[in-house]
Image (cartoon, rainbow, N blue to C red; front, top):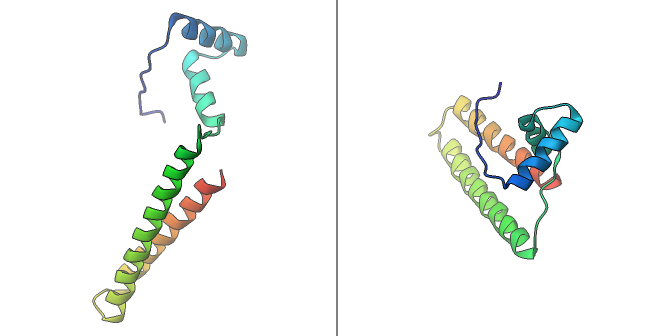
Length: 105
């Protein structure tokens, strides 16, 4: 189900190129853009972009470790139900898995 609307500005030449590509593929221009988004890999322009991404991932990892430490401490002190502990632990594992999947790309 398509719920989000994205609006972009194109030059006349860019639009005509997209329209010709869409026509050649027998699809609408909107479908052309969806397929481009779904099939393209993100390319980093320079080392600065990669360094920024690496720093962000490290920051997220540090936060996950801090949450895990608080979670384990609260569990050991009996301040957390088993259900809450399991739910939060599973959520952290899912986040870690998703980060690893993004890094593989």
